[in-house]
Image (cartoon, rainbow, N blue to C red; front, side, top):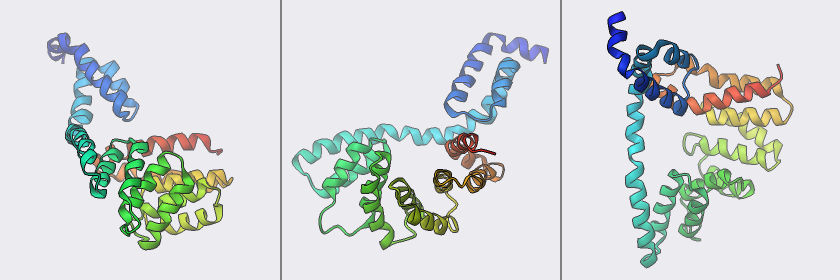
Length: 245
């Protein structure tokens, strides 16, 4: 061990720096910070092996950002000469992936015509409207989607509509649709939106139960899914702190 520490010494700070930057960005369990700080270079290597290397799968997805942005620029030029609904819809989808919700919504507005009966553009516009906190508009779009297909996007559409009902003060319809959706869907997003709605209604024990259901997934999920669910785990832990015991 002593020889290994001596060998690693010139690289200790580099390895620890890489590990700490990854820790800040990905925010895994807090005990890893102690492993990095106290374990020095060796602790950083252990962290990198367990937490950083498996993230290369997610890194491949992030590389798609560059061709996506290039395609956005291409479409912005194309629609100047050919403002076809299909071009606007493709551009809107890409902008939604980039989390540019206001611009995406504008493009969805231009892509949706009076003859459009497909649910997808209304669904995606509804997501933009929720992110922009225009909940009445989201209700209109998501109702259109859910009325046509209650199972849309593995019941995420129903969960988002219940969330939009809650945000517009329609507690009765929100509660009914949430209860119906969580009997089928296991999406952490839906569970947490339901928990926040329950808290707003003063039903703190129920809110705690649904929040804990999200955290209960953590030990049983495969590591790659656990990584994807981290934002929801963080949100669940934050919500639990706000709920009275």
